View 1 (cartoon, rainbow, N blue to C red):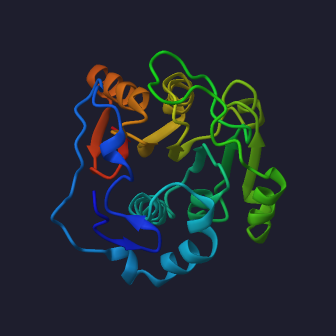
View 2 (tube, rainbow, N blue to C red):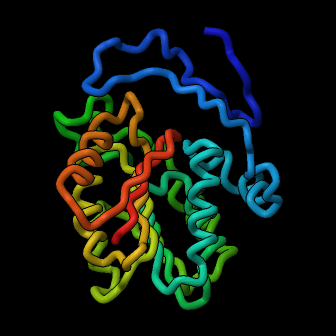
Length: 243
């Protein structure tokens, strides 16, 4: 397959797709939307932080990064804190940190030792992937922000680190990027009761061929619950909005 287009490392297709297995639980096909509007390039504030802090510290493409940025920015004046589980090197956390106000808290949670809680529901991840993280460097990235509003919690969430969050905390936004069914399920079940009305829970990797566990989990949630609205933006995000 020939490369269609690449800008700043963002490709319009997945490399070596033709070499992937042909058997998947969910139908997989390369998607090429006809929409060509790129609002992120018109957003100087986003592009500055994306270029300087985010791009080299995340595996999340610019499309999903901008969606996180835009949602967090629109929620900035809404009372409630933000939770991200699956920080890796801190790139998407920077987008969230730029959009908290003085009354909110941002909790950045990760093992910083790789993926955990993999199971038979996960078709690619076996545990320990994405462990190439220098925890001290991640902490250094966030030293430029208001430290009283940001907590970086190292360990399995919620099992080991949720105790460090006040039990009365309410969340307006949660970003879940952990790659594995059981891990994401435990996070969702912990945060959903604490999510405010019209608050967002965003799952990364929804629909990804390598993350069928996440796709299954989200489908299980939206097919059994009536207290949410569900949006799939064809970019790898599953967005749940609490009714």
